[in-house]
Each structure stands twice: as C-alpha cells, then as structure tokens.
Length: 192
Image (cartoon, rainbow, N blue to C red; front, top):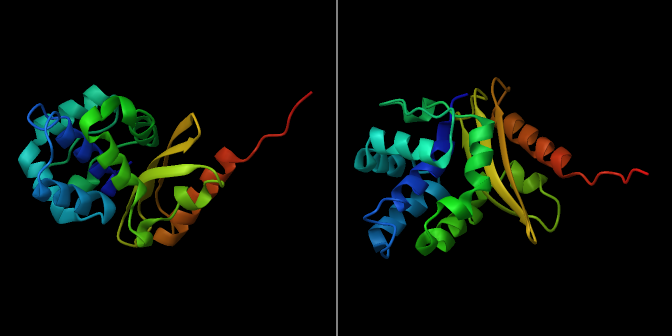
C-alpha cells in the first residue's frame, strides 16, 4: 500500500532521533519545519527533510523502529510503500522511539493536526480517548486514504493503522477509517 503523507510521521521520528539532534533543543526554524510537515501536511517541508536526512538514514531508521513494509521511493516519496501494521506499530511505540527530550513536542504535533485534517480516527474514537495521528490521502482521488494513530484512555494505549485504496473519493476513505475506528473501540458485551 502506498504511504502518501503517512511517511511524514517516520520523517519526524528519523529527524528527532539523529545523534546530533536527540539531546539538544530544537531551533525555531527546525520546530517550524516539523510543525508545517505534521500539523499542516506540508509536502515541501517533507521534501526538505528527505533531502537533509538522505534515503539511507530514513530506511535504516524505519527498520530500527520495526517498520517491515517501508521503502523510500526516490523522487516520489508519497508512493513509498507502507502498511496498516507499520502505521499501528509506529504510533503504538511512540514513547519508546521518540527521544525523551522531544517526546512532548512530537506528540503535541500529532495531537494538534489542523482542523481540516481531523477526519477518520479522531472522529471515530469514543469519548475519553485522546488521539495522536497522521493521515495521508491522494488529492481527493480516492486512490489512497490512510491514517496511523495512537489512542490513549488513561493507561490504555492502542496503535491503529487503517489503509484504504480505490474509494470513490477521500471523504469516502475518511468515513471508512472513522467506521473502522468505531468498530474497533465499540464496547464488547460481557459474556457469562
């Protein structure tokens, strides 16, 4: 499955985990670049980070994090393959993979995605669940609408990844992700 903008979550982690970055404060320019990429899904910011990090570092970090299906497509990064499993794993393990110094900043970015992109998982999550997520879509073509998310309710933490392909449009894919989220988190009846 093509990753579209869900790759931006991996780019953020890769950047923050660099030895030259992980133990120091971020500059204002770094914070702005990362915020544009995650909160507003800015493709230019993602391209800048890919150029700075390099393909080898990004792919190596993906393997280190435990992403099994990711491979960066040079020049067409939005077509880089990923999977729902990879997205669920990435978000489920955020606290383990994010450097302690940058954990609050990164999780705040995932929690404060711009209102126009708050579809799917955050709309399907029941009351009491806090969503940190990143979505990707194929420019209203319906060819790809994906989301990876970390949902937390108290001490309970879930990683969710939902990928859709071939929908009539992005809104349909977003509604599908919302419905899958509702179904996954629907209270189950007690069995005797």
